[in-house]
Image (cartoon, rainbow over all chains, first blue to last red; front, side):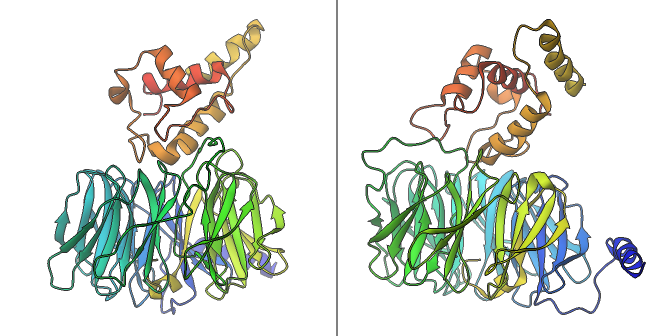
Length: 380
Length: 102
């Protein structure tokens, strides 16, 4: 009975705002089909609110303000929305382009940049008001937009194989253009220390790394020819690269067109191993301590998760949470992981040591899960 | 309405016992969710091009089916033949060309 009353109370509370609550263990889950966000509490393993009216959130992502109170949501329809996770309200919203694909917040928290497919390029906004402060046309779809130390943003041009570094420290963008990144870069990441930027390529048989500590970074091909001599397998979903790559002394990266995960030494960037996987990897995410790497897969094998051991580089656990595992998010110290299982309409929470399922939370077509701890991580 | 047509489309051959039935609901889901990975959930385009009818005017039905089944070599469009039957590709081509997604 008590349980029933609690459940009823929680249900009734869902549309109501979250008041006077610290935000350090909260998070947001994108509900892609309904254009809404669930506010979740990591410690309680519960949903505690919902924010609606955010437009087309297919493939949406978000970043947090440094105080972890606000999130900036990048919708596929070009909408940039600032939400307050305490009040559960939309604070500001602009339609800044026709079709966008993610964004970043500057190291000082004062600027938000959005990467656009249509019309292409990057636009930069005041994080307080969402007034536009810079427009950087590129005549190309832009991908892999991240923040870098020194009030910089880094992004890459799908159609041109260039990476641009926009230095905003002087107020207006100072651009460094780096050509020769490779054919059709589909996504990129920056490592947690802000030093290494790695672009994944669809059209070339390698990845490309930049050392952002150099004044003029030079593209360096890594994992050159990793698929040489092998037929390319169909890629039904492009992998995602995110700043979760460091596992022990290696970076772990998804292959494209091969069912494997690739490992390179984090200092020398030379190959240290490959792990055959169940399918085309989408995310290969190191647990925050780096001890394990969790991998999910492209359609039609997206019902499965594999867990790799960083020391042996072998698969140590495989399970099927359900159809459409789109995203994973670790709690900041890595003891639990939340999975969004789109077709089940559930978020599933697992213990990362025992692999025991701890809880399921109902959600409408959940995709990205974003915990507020991202506020304090470069590149997230 | 398009859902109804799709159901009829799906049911008729099954009754006739000729062509293998396609599961219209599953295919619509596939188009939205999985084609949508590159082309956008609303098919307005992403890394892959816009798939709304106006953007597909240069394709006849047969060519579009071939693109779905065999992909476009040299681009990110993969062949779906390993996952789809010709009937299913035909259904998807019709769905896209007639704006079933809108």
